[in-house]
Image (cartoon, rainbow, N blue to C red; front, top):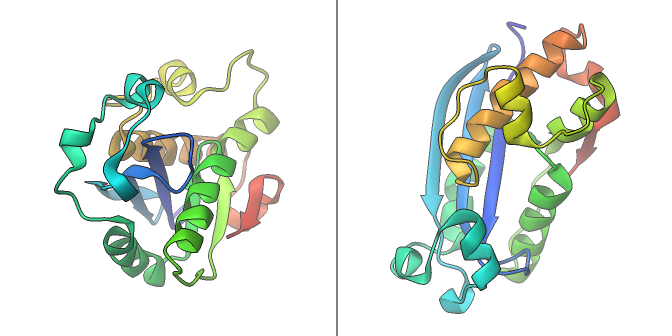
Length: 183
């Protein structure tokens, strides 16, 4: 696993609109080891929130009133992607759609990035009734902080995906071809 490099990513949104990112988190994995975890509060357009989204993550308009908007945060995330253009997310269809919708909304270019989904991997590898991120991390005794906070979820996802690669008997990311796609 010494040659496994990727960036686990997670987003929280202010509303049902996928371009309403209010928090972004990344966890950088190099050589099969977690080397950095980072998160940013993000001010969504109009800084409006849904009651239901607040109930999930606890982030409120007052938390993001003075936060940078997505293009500024994406510029920082892009610097990480230049070194390692591979993303991993738990339920990647959600997080990748957040990226796609936000890039479109802010008229930003789409980078050439591969992605993998730790949820799809879990469904392929394990036979559990539940494949939610917190359930799997609890089952495998993967430490985590606050679920539904982007930095903590990104790190949970990174550690889970490393476990999945090991449990699947793989040594390279490209061998996880049943759970990947392109941004």
